Amino acid sequence: MKWLRTWLARGTPTEALPPPSIGDRRVYAIGDVHGRASLLDALLILIAQDDAQRGAMPPHIILLGDLVDRGPSSRQVIDRVMAMVASGGDVRCLKGNHEEIFVLAARGEVRAVPVFRRMEGAATLASYGLDPLLFGVMTDEEVVAWMLNNVPREHVDFLDALPDQVEMDDYLFVHAGIRPGVAIDAQNGADLRWIRREFLDHEGAHPKMVVHGHSITDDVDLHPNRIGIDTGAYYSGRLTAIGLQGTERWFLQTND
Image 1: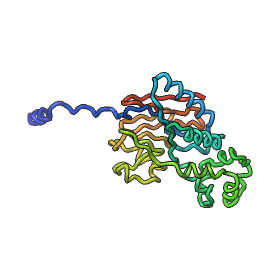
Image 2: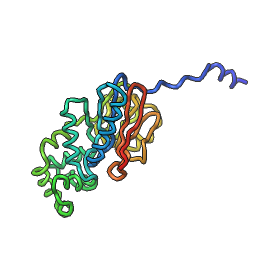
Image 3: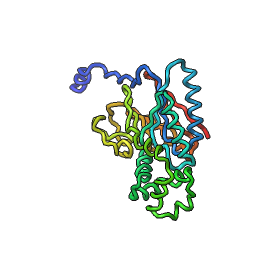
């Protein structure tokens, strides 16, 4: 009966940790847009309607990065997000791995072009006026020269200056994830934009509840230590936002 005495000595089971809180604010975080301007517009309408129904409280909007590539309207998405940030409301956008490569190529880094091609950058340059068939036969040096001449520098500068993370109370917003076991202020920017399996497979607690995109799932990927909201909008037509207020959370999605 030693096991019973040991079990009784532990007392009652420890209560579950309280749910994470975003504090006294309302936040909407938006997953990977990937050049689908029409879906972003539709989701922003849903957010505005939801926000109005919930009562007066200025909303905070966070886009989790990967605005560009794959979809047909990357240029229009960048224009839209730049206008949102300049509007005076609390709108922030994070840098995704697709922005990182796009910026490198647009600043003249020839070595970035092969990766840019694999990331379906042809669709991005098509939104700036380059025929995808021509892109396919251009050398990497020709692609860089075209981007230097045709991609607005204000777009490149805006994307280049985007932060890697936003921290609010019990939540951390990043593009890809964090390195398990590393303090938030010691995280590497490359991990925040690119990490996948080491983060996704980690079942232990993180310093904050992590809200992220980057890794596509059919629907919201909800776990005790993280929430993934990249639902493959560029091909599924389903762009997802998470809403947060206090300890409450909810989700909004387009249905193209």
